[in-house]
Amino acid sequence: MRVPISSFQNKRIKHVVKLRNRRHRDAGQETIVEGIREIQRALAQNIVPTAAFICPEIMDDGEETAVLTAKLEKLANKNGTQLFEITAEIFAKIAYRGDSGGLLL
Image (tube, rainbow, N blue to C red; front, side, top):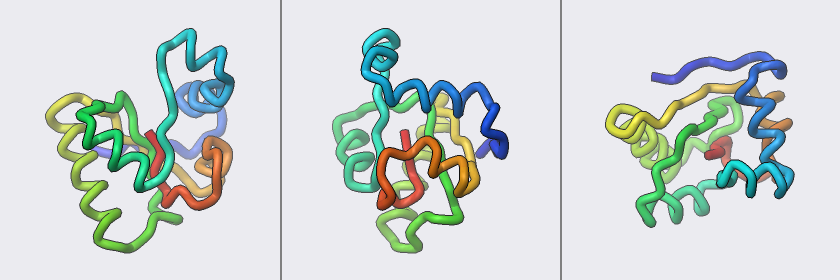
């Protein structure tokens, strides 16, 4: 189940923004995975994300994205990965690059 986030003040959004800084990534032993190909590679290595941020407004309509989204839904049901549905404005704030396909782990 996707939890909607529409506020920039949400603690999860603030946490992801902090992870842009290497010091915060190292301290929490966390990283950000952004983009369809990169997320596919991470999941192929059996990485289980703690959270996934999905922006339907800017997601690609292709089959590749649909399959990846289905995998994330399965992980949410099986392993407790939290799925968050966010707006394009919030995605722009947390994303490193513009061509990430609307998905970020």
